[in-house]
Length: 327
Image (cartoon, rainbow, N blue to C red; front, side):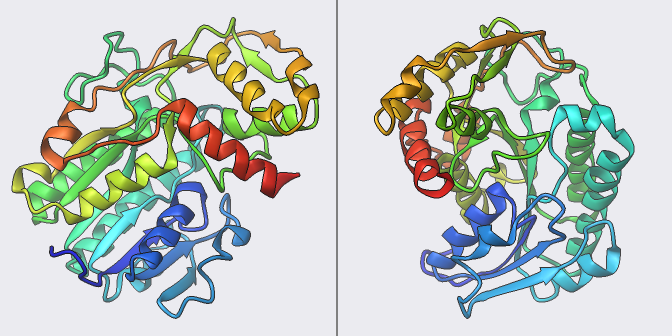
């Protein structure tokens, strides 16, 4: 694929956090972007930068409905499959719906993409696939047993993608996201991600509640690093780089205590009172792994991945966005 080529792109879950960022980015690059979303967890306000762009098309539909998938992939060259029900706790509370969306919906999208002869199918995989594997850093070909229904569904996605590549010849690339954060991430709801939830609480001078003693660690990954990985996955002409999975992360880890300290430091620039907000601690959460750290050597070697944003760099940008948009 040559630089400057205009591609016809489908982004499922395009009204969600990562999906909406991909929509904005690829539209800004001049591509034609179709968004498929049922707005179960995505939001129309995430698409305000896209909706009036003549190269943008919104299809309100559900990946669990095969006809919706077929309609969405018509004329599409590249699929970025971001639609899923995230959250380990949600999957523990409702494994059936999580499976319907994440497995049956994924299979519908694969079949529709195969039948439409799309050039490549990129999909959101997950670091939860590493399960009870204790080794650090996490390397793509060494995984353990899943620790939640959500993790099972994301591993099944990888298995299906591999079989479709081998059986039908469709090119697939899975991106195992590690704790992605940034603009457009929803701070509300029972299953809100930790960073926007803590930001909102601190902005309101409420005490964030950490599960456990705060020493669990994560490879927090800023949204712009994720966008870079998705674009590299679409553009690569290296045949060795397709039909596989990649860690999508920064390649560093920070504890939850580190995270809250950084958040308080950055937010205190806007409101000094935030520095004095106390932190609460509770029991560990079911299905959580203690530590997560990605090796990004494979992505660097095969895709040329070069992440620009550490946790602190990304948090500074994210906090500025939240302060402007969520006050």
